[in-house]
Image (tube, rainbow, N blue to C red; front, side, top):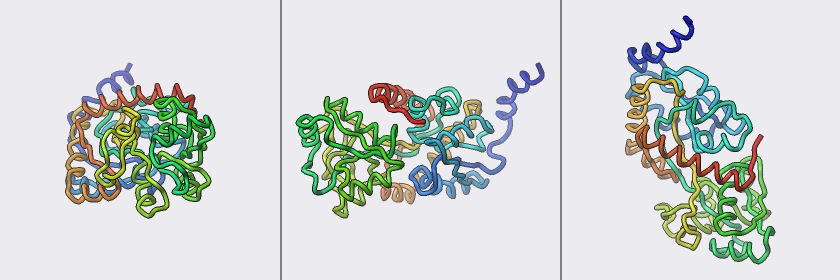
Amino acid sequence: MRLALVSFLYPFVVFAQPFPVRTVTIVVPFPPGSSSDLIPRALAPLMSQSMGVPVIVENRPGAGGNVGAALVARGDPSGHQVLMAPSAILATNQWLYKDPGYDSQKDLTPVINAATTPNMWVAHPDTPVKTIRDVVTQAKGKPGSLAFASGGNGTTSHLCGELLKTAANIDLLHVPYKGPAPALQDVIAGRVPLMCDNFSNVITHVRSGRLRAVALAALKRHPQAAEVPTAHESGVAGFEMGVWYGVAVPAAAPKPVVVKLNAEFAKALRDPKIAERFEQLGLTVVADSPEEFARFVAAESERMRKLVEVSGARAE
C-alpha cells in the first residue's frame, strides 16, 4: 500500500521541485561517431550554458539501440536522463524485434524531433542505372537479379529497398551487411550496384564521383543536392524514406519537465552555428512541440509497422 502511494505521488513531488537540479545526461543508444551521437554533442554545451547544469552525452550502444532505450525507459523519470531517440527507437524496432526490452508507445514520451535527413538511392558509376526509372525497368526485366546493399535487416537502407519493391511492384535482391559503412564500401567497390542510405552518409561519395546519385527518397529536393531528382517526381509517387533524430524521456516524466526540455533543445537547435553545422551534415532542423512530435511518431510507427509486415524483415 505504501509503495503504491509513493508511486502515485512521485510525479507530483517531482512537479513541485525545480528542474534541473543536477547533471542532465543524454543517453545515445549507438556508438560514437554516428549522427545520433554528433547531434547531442553539438547541442550539449549550449544547453549546459542555458540550463546552468552540466549536460553530458553517454553512449550505451547494443541490440540496434534497444540497450540504451531500455535503460532510459526504465530509469530516472525526473528528466535528468533523456534518450536520443532516432526513428528506429521510436517507430521501427518494436516491429522488428520480438522483445526489444521496452515499449516505445507506453514507456517513452516524445520530447522533440531535433532533425531529419532523407535517404538517397546511389549506384556505382559503372552500373547502367542513372534514374529510379532505370532501376524499375531493369528490375522488371530480370526479377530478383538487381541487388541493393543495406546496413542490415530492418535498417532504413533495407526498408527503403522494401518500400521501392512494394511501391513499384518489383523484385530486388537484398544484400544485408553489419552496418552501413561496410555496405557502402562494397557499393563503392562495385561489388553491389545499389544502396539507399542516409543522405549525410552518401553525399560526400557522390560529390567525389565514387557514387552516382540516382534519386532522393523524399517528396522535395534537398537544398544541398538540388540537382538530384526525387523518386516521387521521377514516377514513384509518394516515395519517402529517411531518418529523424528525436529526444524522449521515460513516460512517467512530469509534463512541466517535458515542456522545459523541449524549450531547451529547441533553443539550442535554433542557434545559427548549430544550423550551419547541421547543414554541413545534411541535416534539417525540425524543433517541433512535444504534441506535434508525438503525432508524428504515431504516424511513422504505423507506417513502419505496415512496411515491416510486408517485407517480412526481422532482427534478433
